[in-house]
Length: 321
Image (tube, rainbow, N blue to C red):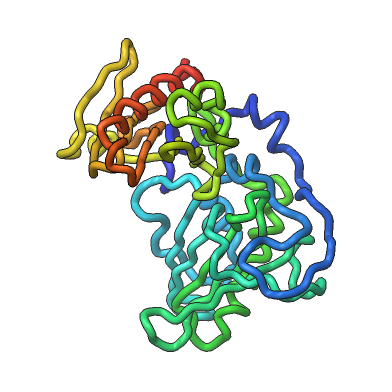
């Protein structure tokens, strides 16, 4: 299995009120014209996507994909799963599912019902691999965040139109998303189901970064950004604990009883990392606060701002016991 018990968790208490719906939000209003922002109509809730196990969804790919030869990137990823197969109808394939893919490059330009899955508009993205003949295609359906989509890409297709193949594979995945999709397990304290935009309020942020509006999760379902005099990002993720602690540019910093790892990669960026959960296989769930600016006069303040925000964030995280 790709995932470990610690790092693929969700909080079922939260789930009881948010994740149980099996229908997507929105209506089926018509629209026209190609666009790089999501179409109007039904959308997949972000809260649902935080809880879903993408590798469980990839298992919905039809048998024609062939026999799996490997899954994932060698470490758990909350929002992405990659499956490699061989011996199927369409050759040796790489199938990549992303629950929070960037909408740029997708085209939603077929307004009729023939280009819907489960009532959701389908967008298409076709690319050439390194300038070779077309062998890859991507499809997507919209989420509540107009910059993000649920996307599936398939590469290595031979003997068939890759866009036809990827749509064939994507259909059961989207159908399962709307009907009791596979979820991450839930040890106490996991961050996987926590909305990163909910953990820092404006009253906390304003003294740190100046006036700002609501956080924007444009980079993914586990990341949120606020913009003021500097940009501040809160991100929950999975990474190797040893890497967090041993990077050459990392130093241990205690803020009262809270242990952090400070990473100052460049003059214009500073990150504070808190390890929320660990397991015996060296994987850790982490909460990161990053502050960055292109204003050189603010460079000396960035780590102070990141430290202050991180110290305010940690007490709001789920309890681990």
